[in-house]
Length: 103
Image (cartoon, rainbow, N blue to C red; front, side, top):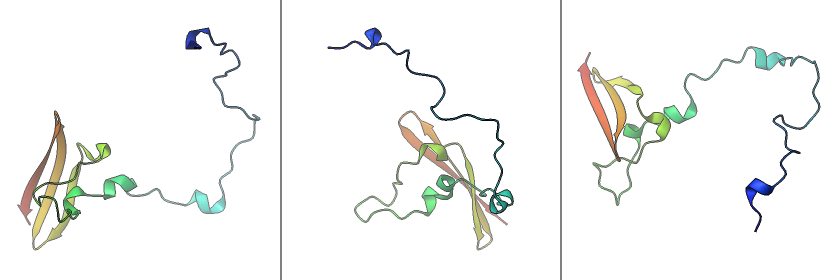
């Protein structure tokens, strides 16, 4: 049995292997004017818009992704009503609050 504390780790370095130089990275022409995405892709998946399985209780939503917690979502205005939602975690439960505002 080999203990981790007895291993010789001197060959490991804090910097990755490879050549290093003084060259500055030059952007390609098409990269220079590319705009960043409006939202990260995982925030585009709104839980309230997802369909539930037929075997599941329709009142239950799937467990949210950890990056979706504590974000305020404004859903598109339909029939003159705007919907705001936010999901928070309380212990092992997830609480989604909805606010309906007539416009």
